Length: 334
Ligand code: IMP
Ligand code: MG
Image 1 (spheres, helix red, strand yellow):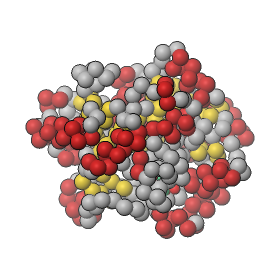
Image 2 (cartoon, protein in one colour; image 1 turned 90 degrees about the vertical axis):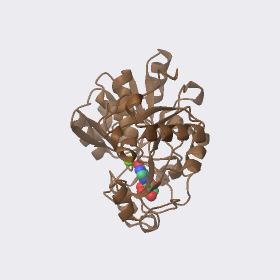
Image 3 (cartoon, helix red, strand yellow; image 1 turned 120 degrees about the vertical axis):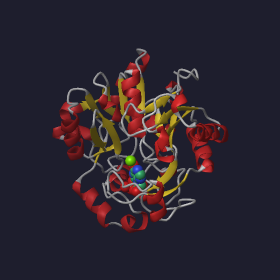
Image 4 (tube, helix red, strand yellow; image 1 turned 180 degrees about the vertical axis):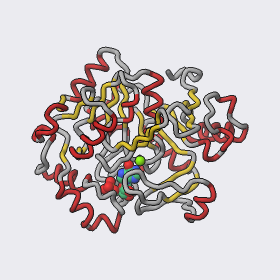
């Protein structure tokens, strides 16, 4: 499983696309809230911004799923299926909740838009209707018929058969409805346990929980961000990012060890993927071997490992899927 230890946007898309290619994943199943999440994948010079299709799509042998816990916007889903060319190898659970126009309108007009700064994707209103048991499900949507699947059954069967299965979490630990900075959170829990439940896989079946942490922290929308820097300072440091889904500025702060430690606890993290190290240390750019990293960068990696208490096994050194230092084999975690 791959989940996010901060507020989202740590680079899950990049980490998952790397693992899919490198490990030749058989299955990649997306959990999470819905199309409020944007995962960026850069592969062979092309940039994909995915809100529904799992990031493992880059490996052509990988079967893709969207778990029952996820809210689906059929229009966004069908557009991405065409863009990525995955028709024939993607399944949507029959019980995914469907986002309709009225949910999007409610999200854009509602009290949460101004107060929390939601993505306006309709995910929150859809999930609230789901709790009221008035939401439409994927099995009722004609355009989705060819994609419908029993995702829980198919993913569990793949695990039984010894296949390589990855569950893709979305958002970030501190956007969790239960464990995050309430009320400045998304509309459901998004920790590792929730991602299991989204797909329909029991916690005893998960071998590794890879928690993605970016070398600095960003947050879009309202809510606390300890150590937040002014936008001009974020720009100066190269940390000034723009959101994938909404195009809003991401607020930025230095790496936060307290949050990282708590996220490791909440998710039962067994490995850390540390991304965007090349932004902190430009000499790292494109490195694929640990020895290529400057001493200062290695010290930061060790500090993360020691203070969070979880091994750093993957280190992101650029946007391209394969720009990664992979220490999993060396650390006996592959
Ligand atoms: P909602 O999920 O659209 O209801 O938005 C609630 C809060 O979560 C807002 O602060 C959003 O900016 C934030 N949020 C939701 N999904 C993501 C994500 O994938 N990345 C970063 N922030 C997110
Ligand atoms: Mg994102």
